[in-house]
Length: 146
View 1: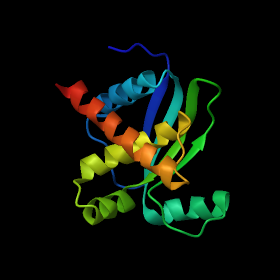
View 2: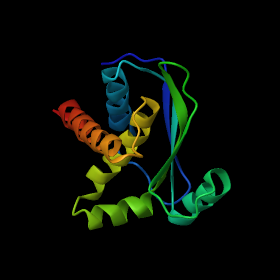
View 3: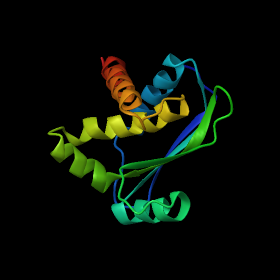
View 4: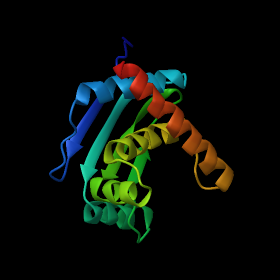
């Protein structure tokens, strides 16, 4: 087991509840460690589209729906921040990309952490690397469970 002094929190502003939180926490810790980083405190906040749209408008001046917004408070290799996830958008994206909800949720959960690790997704090249890293880290979840 990876021994980290950090904390991972899961909060919900809607009716979504993450099952087996401890399994997800261990997986995220493993992801962070695999990138040579350390866990400080990361909070995931599950919400609906309107909640996340409001944050997008107020803090980022974007008037669009999105599946994730992450606020990075990391310092060096110590990862800290708040990651807001619209479970409505994750569900819609899963249907659009013919993926099951749990896999799409893992992709979004790890996406925020990968941003904290320094990965970007604005250019096509960066986005391709981000997708590759997401898939690589999702495989760590399955390794964790075996």
